[in-house]
Length: 203
Length: 272
Image (tube, rainbow over all chains, first blue to last red; front, side, top):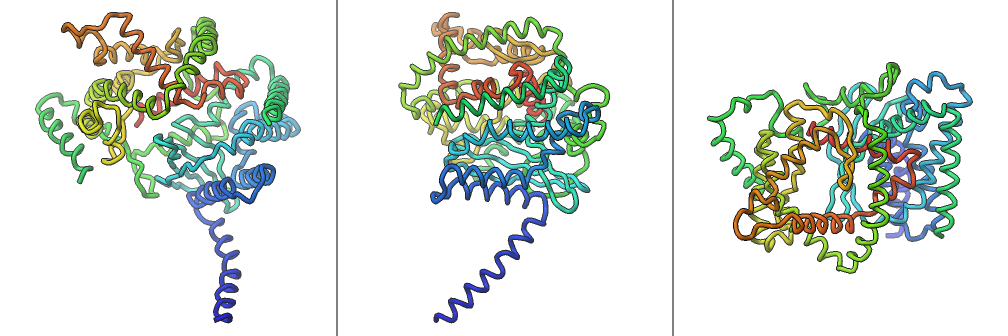
């Protein structure tokens, strides 16, 4: 009896990392599914404190989303004119801004579910359509992915047909036109500060 | 079995209309591409359209991505400012008071209004030859008005899986090829564009609250209609998770963020 248990256990332990690794290496829908399901696991894990939860969500997002290619598409023609230092600074500020905006809100998660509706793949590009089911509402959320070096990475998310990249692109390009790229970077810094002090004031 | 009901009603309407306009043979499919499984990218899919913008390395080379004209921006920003004040000084306090009403009751009120406004969605679906959606709306109206106690509940969705179809006259105009023309911020009503503002007028013709429908002794006065509309708005807002405040807090320019979100959302709905 004991021996059987150990055999089963070891089988489980040995195969588990293998299946996890292969799952991560497969198609775009699995990539999104992996991210979403892992996120839900983290958010519903009672054994984690706020801090640990935030850290895990952060690293999960950083490994699933390609912020550099997202930034490149947001800045569009301004990306070409930017120096390598400015580009790096923008990518970092953009990550910080999203984090300051959303990290304090992950505890608002309450039993919402995600349905996977459709996956479309063409060469190295893919769109994964999902529904976020919350209460009596069903919100369509679509992910756009790009395959770089054999790994699918998310670079745009559309919520109710509103693409994040397109939305930031329009807002930011108007600011760049008025105040220049430096002006945008400074405004982003101020905003991050603002959101962070607000976030810590609430606690 | 219940899924056959909307199809059946839709087919009946389709048959009765086939003799009519030749528009039924329009290349635009009557029912939007459904979100059902399948990986292959089909012919005529909007896959490439969704990507060309983001994937081209030249994205934005000749100006920004396709967006809406905003020749009235200074005036629009003025109304945006006005609506913002209205939100914080009038709507928000009203919503706060309204939240005394228990949430299930507010949801029922929302269902009631939504059921009442079915003619707008049904008519708009028909005008776009979306017979399946029109059938769904008709089925929802029948079920929710009867089993759903005058529209207070939504058994059509809960037990029959019939989801509400968001259709309005602005989308009808879009279906017939009218673009947004330019962006408008309306006082009280918020973001719009020339097409959708014209659509609002069309909606009011199909709105049962409008006097054009109720010509009998039950006719509503203008004030009554405004009160009813305001109650509907405040009630819906009381069930919202303060989306506007979120955007306002987080965006570097809420005016542009909302303009872009509005346009993307509307154009997306028209494509569906």
